[in-house]
Length: 373
Image (cartoon, rainbow, N blue to C red; front, side, top):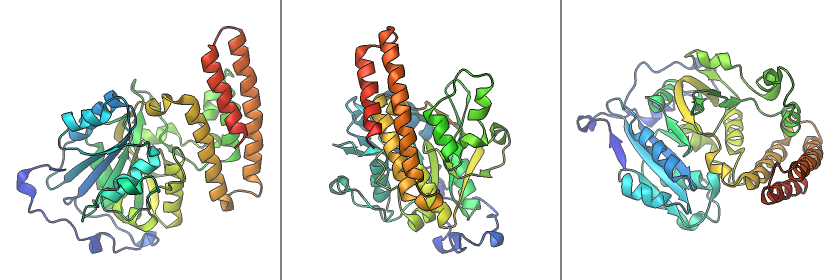
């Protein structure tokens, strides 16, 4: 269901799509900002899996967004076969929110693609999602915010992101300024991964003096935290999918998420495809979102570890042209070395009573699984 900021704004005309997208996204030098905000259609998509309480807080924050006159907000939840009553909660407490209750877990990618299809975008659905696809709406929204259920938008963050995309025709996507629940800064934009990042991830150098500077550095794919102290948007390689807004024109140009990624790396892949098609990807320091990081994946921690590395290896193989020859094989070798090292650490924790047998068994099973990737 679409929510209007005011019943008196229904006569406000939307900018024509031909005017909105008449510039070639590759012609950066010829672009100018739009002189004013006009009524826009914005959709927020939330894919949930057993995050009922967090999902409730997420939806409340979205629906509390102050909307400029003429702006239409549509909220769509895809529930991935949650067992905690999430779908019933949405249906009962949020009657203005559209709900697609999937009987199977389609993953983050499959759920978002199902939502994009329902919103009227020409995206490819997985075989599992095709029987669940609702009839697409006739008029797709101008912008789509992909929002994690463990995220809460603050103030007018949604409007700031949509306005930025409307006024920056070369921008295909933008991300928000993420903070943890305690207010601490959270990296939400990254450079595309390098071998140094892989090594730092697989062999953490915890406990060394000043090591946090290395992990927050360019070598580890981070942008300086001071960039978020400004209100000026800045261009990045990719943004975290916790709060990723896409221009409708960009979705039509490059398609939806790659359903070969069940979970993880799908936003990195999408942003790389946007760059390749001539679109810019930006971060907006002024658009604040609280992200209770990893709450949905923490429920299946060690399954998520395997999925993370399966997705990363798929990304490296798919985009092998941007990496040196043999890169994926080298990463696999480092992954096996890391799994062996972490397995020894896990057994030591169990032997000294620092971990239970059940937890250690799950951890070791995950390391065996990634060693076979």
